[in-house]
Length: 175
Image 1 (tube, helix red, strand yellow):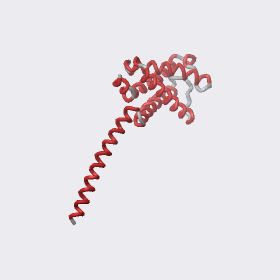
Image 2 (tube, helix red, strand yellow):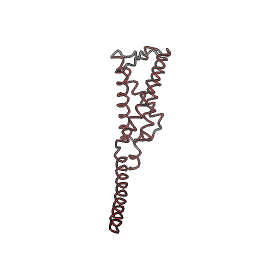
Image 3 (cartoon, rainbow, N blue to C red):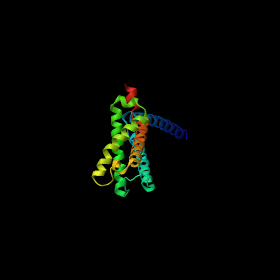
Image 4 (cartoon, rainbow, N blue to C red):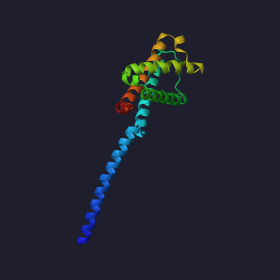
């Protein structure tokens, strides 16, 4: 019987050591993942950019359905998937630019979002118009310009917010 208690005590000690070492490994792996921008960060960025894309699409579709905008945007399943993917690409491009350019790291969220949203608007809208998916806003009227630009700026602000909260702080701390 005493041998059983000794073995149980030894097993308990080994189990405790194993748990402590696992907790240290998990913490170390988590810290490394944070430093390298691991899967957790990618998920945060993806969700943030997705939210921005969904809000942007909702603004445009509400304006279209209410008659304030004459952009002519239709939201089919293929257009929706393309919209989401384009939002991801635009968000990750902004992430790379923000990590590389110190000046962007020092600007506020709204300014970066307004600039980025305007740049993306100036690129995406003419591309979509050349494919016949939408009407060029400056041909559709001032309300269409304001609403479509507002939707893109909203996406830019949300993407910038996501990046500022999850993106580049390790780069600033290292320098």
